Image (cartoon, rainbow, N blue to C red; front, top):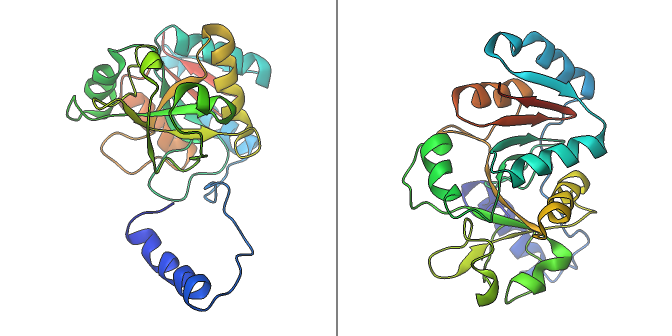
Length: 241
């Protein structure tokens, strides 16, 4: 899923090995979470070393169910969150481990994100992350798209329900999320669906005119210099005062 310089060499080698030489495929990549991972202790140490209290932020370490419920409620309330979990993604797309997450139902969210967070042209689009099992209810195609590499037409009757990540031509470059590939992100979207009836969130890369964040400190730095409302860092929920 690295459609660029990072993937050309690997793709060329795979093409020769399988297509030209006829060797069978023994491995099918089902996720892109091959980057660095940080332990709970490492994240806790970085959080404790930060000066969140001085900037009026509230820091809570929460059990998973409460963390997901509160995070989903904040998204449903129009808040913009940095979401940092597990291993970083390999490739050009944020796929729910180094993501900024927002409410796909709000038409104004695209402009808010481009102006407040990404600091780029207001017409730049964002992606929908959807529970994989609900894809056929919202899009014209149901083929899995876990790497955010394909644009599917949003069903006409659903376009007004998720306007923020729907492109002007009625398509969305979606990410289908399964409980197997990314359990916590899937649970977050499911919690959002339980509160709103919509199994889709807006997903964009966790960065601001820089490479996607990789380390906990990079996530904190990006959170502090942008206008995100909250940061979910492992089991920590950090909210602005």
